[in-house]
Image 1 (cartoon, rainbow, N blue to C red):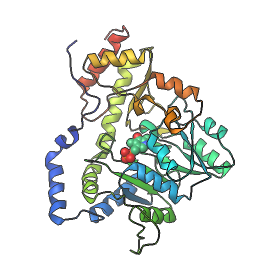
Image 2 (image 1 turned 180 degrees about the horizontal axis):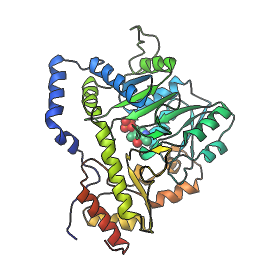
Image 3 (image 1 turned 180 degrees about the vertical axis):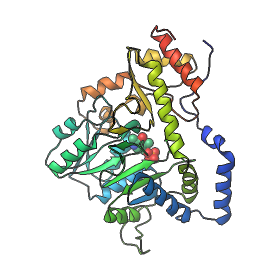
Image 4 (image 1 turned 120 degrees about the horizontal axis):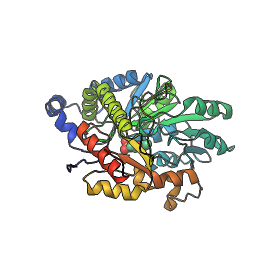
Length: 372
Ligand SMILES: *Cc1c(COP(=O)(O)O)cnc(C)c1O
């Protein structure tokens, strides 16, 4: 086997892959001096809303802020409880915490997404919202979560940070609840050259409230109408994102092709549980932000791959939200605990060539004693 170097993620690749195009955007925006809340931002917001099929999108500093603003805009605060998956970034929980509400992490199911049964079991008279994370580029069973929300009078706010373009029954992640957040962190499917995010909503009142929260309380008519903060998506980042959004369908195609390729090469390895393959379930259209597998002897495999030049990652540094004792969580979530001993993310990005993927799969097969 020839040795190769396959990093988990290559942060320089995106810029290098369209350097001339990116520089043209920077030059154009720079010469116009169009830096804060300019037309490139409103254009991108409109294109993003159109892309996901929502009425409104609002550029914000990052998805964490977008989610926090969504929670605040929904009127959630002290005395309220909000249910989310323990298998999510701490950012999801922080967005709720800083609104003053209690964070209630629950178990996920075999698809690594929040388990609707666990959600229902965690509901109390104080529960106000469910914040499902559309994890790894897959959208949760929104029929089941929607039914629970209706039955108990709860709102849904989606953490769609990882799920731009992901669909459940043809409907895009980010459009199921009263609001959602998407991240443009560089390693996300649509990444910018720094931090960035968007809030998405179909609700005009929520839109107005988030509009104010992100820009010093300034309302759409220009007057200061409430207390606000400063978390605007830079106009330059918006222009760079708009430039990339035009080619985003190709990104999704490529990621789905890589996922298909992983399935073909690894499906016979009994020690591995793969994510659902593209088109394996007609209800789901996955965009593969991550390719998160479950494996036996996870830490040994990770070490072996590293020795062979292959980077992998255990999501969230290997700790689920409820495991963060420093933050005061006391829940006991055995399914999530077990998953966190088994899960591993393989390289899944636009820099990954077919040959790289073959090498990753050959190396995994060798580790478990399978023929190439
Ligand atoms: C990346 C991510 C976030 C945070 O996004 P930022 O734009 O970095 O604030 C939140 N939730 C999930 C699930 C994420 O993957």
